[in-house]
Length: 313
Image 1 (tube, one colour):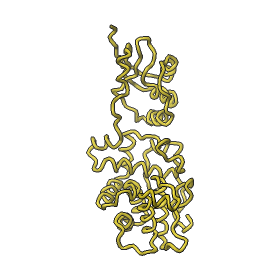
Image 2: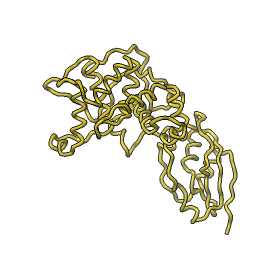
Image 3: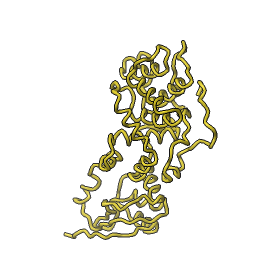
Image 4: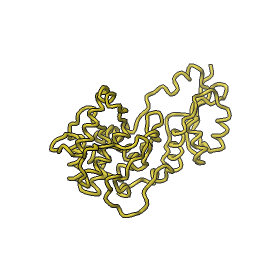
């Protein structure tokens, strides 16, 4: 029986290419994962991992293709442990562990409400990208953020932690709206108005008190609550609201509420399902780490003075 050997290597794009040309049968590469790894490598955020690049006894690559592809895409070398001589029995245990999420890392770092904080970064990311509904789905998720980039984002925007605390203080009905959506809106809204105004909005939406019959907040809140009951949605010929659609609706409710527009006889509409998010905020108020600003698919509005959104936005 051959004992596997381990080395610690500097893997250049040339070496990565050579390793990939001798690859055993493997799963199809995931472009978003490769892209995320490549960004981290280019930004100097890639760190040494205990997960090694692995070869079997025939010298064929069996684990590490995403990192190697990212190395080539980024054109940046990285350091990694490399194990050679693994058997078929060893292969059965490759990639069987539970992956750590950004929320897990936030928990290790001592952040409060780590899951909500991690999800709120994702929602702010969505607001900045204005991602179409067909892109924002579980089948085509946003590129994952590294732990260091996510932590840097929080350090740049410490009021996001206050937003998480505010949202957590209100008890929302089950199925109303993800707290991360409201935390993202509170973070930006508090900067262009005040923390009190932003808190009033999310409290009214969460609790549903002191709302008039023609309030856009009440209209969107009722729409979300109706969506919990599939029979109601079916009767009204409505498609269930995913997270993106809820964000569209809450964004529009904010716009209407800010300009004092009541809900008339035509009712409150969320907007076209394939539409992008309305620019209801001045996104220049969000401070981005360089690692996030460099990503080609993030669009930051032109440096123009912010104006109050009109009702049709």
